[in-house]
Amino acid sequence: MISYKLAKRLLWALSPENAHNLTIRALKLGLASAHPPVRNDMLTVRLWNREFINPVGLAAGFDKQAEAIDPLLDQGFGFVEVGTVTPKPQPGNPKPRLFRLSEDEGVINRLGFNSAGMEEAARNLAAYRARPDRRAGLVGVNIGKNKESTDAAADYVAAAKTLAVYADYLVLNVSSPNTPGLRALQDKSELAHILVKVKAALSHSGVDLRLPLLVKIAPDLTETDLADIAEMALAGLADGLIVSNTTIARPPELKSRWKDEAGGLSGKPLFVSSTRVLAEMYRLTHGHVPLIGVGGIASAEDAYDKIRAGASLVQIYSALVFHGPELATNIQTGLLALLRRDGFATVAAAVGADHR
Ligand SMILES: Cc1cc2nc3c(=O)[nH]c(=O)nc-3n(C[C@H](O)[C@H](O)[C@H](O)COP(=O)(O)O)c2cc1C
Image (cartoon, rainbow, N blue to C red; front, side):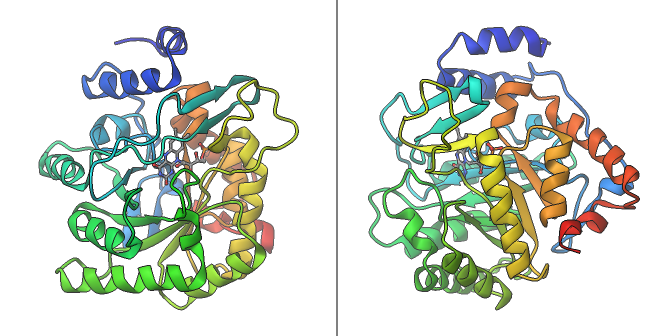
């Protein structure tokens, strides 16, 4: 086993993308030491007829091809969201396309959905599901459209039909800033059209109709967009929302020399805006639509802030680059202490507490 301290020195000497690829390879080879999840009933979240053993998940984009699910669950996550998977394989944008903003504890990426395609993801997911020794934890599958595709709805339908059977929940990613035109799919009529088509396709393909269908949204939406999406979710077109993806904004306090690179910004500089949008979405949906809070979480306090703002579950990604894989279990331990301090018996009891 390699200690994280040593691994970090090695990884930070590499380009961010090479470091990421090496991390996935090391995980697959079983070279990363495990950090078992904190098991405590206070942390168990029951949602969409499913039981999350803890509310801390790995956000989409880390395991795009669904190739390291077990080793990632071994890092203590309650759930892992794989993808974004596109129907056909595509290479993504030219490199370099991933930047560490160390001084800001942020990341900018313009990967542009580098994906091995849905058939490969389906093979990997099928192999994972077939393993009798697979770990406790749930798997979300996040899908997108190919860059060259002119029929977005057809792409989401194709990926949903192929991958839904392996998913504990399915996510339509309509909020990555790195695929031209993608974020326009958050518009009311476009999104409703895609959701209706995907739901219809799933109901005809023998998938359990209770499979939760989620939409992942951008933190850069207008108040009108947010209200429209809330309305669709309340009407039952979506079973949950993930708030949020990376931002195209560049807060003035950024220091890193990479701050003006094109792409989506994540990590610490995203925390405030993504939490604000999360709270707004909770308000607009009156707490009736489950929300997954993601964006800039780097500590138990941050995760707790998201929960109090309205998140039933949280996800992390960028902070792992700066704090290492122990972060998931550290957040769980810290969350337990914060819940006890404030007299909450469960995570669910604290969801939306700031609104009461
Ligand atoms: C390198 C990188 C790749 C990402 N790829 C995806 C992706 O394929 N699909 C997606 O929905 N989100 C993707 N994201 C966004 C994350 O899932 C998450 O929403 C965002 O980074 C905010 O969380 P964080 O601040 O904890 O990183 C990516 C983020 C990063 C840093």
